[in-house]
Image (cartoon, rainbow, N blue to C red):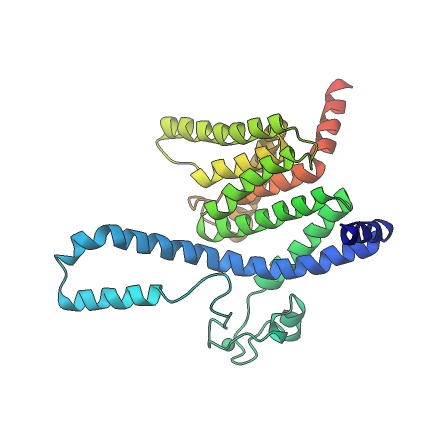
Length: 310
Ligand SMILES: [Zn+2]
């Protein structure tokens, strides 16, 4: 307890040092997020595949030839090699060179290696330092906005989760339950512990209304057009934001995500010539809108009411 109060006092009287500490910590977190973004979808797909094989194997085996059975056993064996967030160690996808500790320093290693593998010189995506640096900068923004208090830590965890969800959804059109569900309950817990100024009641109504509103839009859209406009992960993500920010934040979040979504959608089509029939995941827009509401929701509401009332 005394260590905490010492740290609290030190951070409070040295705001620059506080922000710098958050920056360094978040660079390392950003490096871990890169691993989560890349590996979690692969882990989930392996799990689903194993489950499906289990369900189907009894039916399949009767019809398989010996060769096909051998191939299948080989494939299952390969899938059962340990693969999680820490094992195996990161390797260069081109040559298999194992990334050393020195080559794994956020942003700096990438700059030092000039974006190339030290062994085979094939290029390393700029995405890795980009995710690390964005994580660090957004985290400093959060720390600067909320200052030295417990809620800042919670808001950082929400921010890091939103970054992972956005990137995973962008890559794979998935919003994994392993991230959204714990985040939903964390939102309620934070209200329960009075760490935020959202009452428990507003948090729970926010959770239900967040899920329910997109669920209704989804079914209405499906009824009218016969198409599926979004996934169930989107409902859960809005439930997360409702639980964290209260139900009052939901209209702003929906409005902002529609706005950000249409701007980026039009830019993608105009600048990159992206085919407008390719579905654009909704998760990154919901996440961005949630982040904006977390930081500036109150200010935007005040600005809007002043505009309306004057
Ligand atoms: Zn290499």
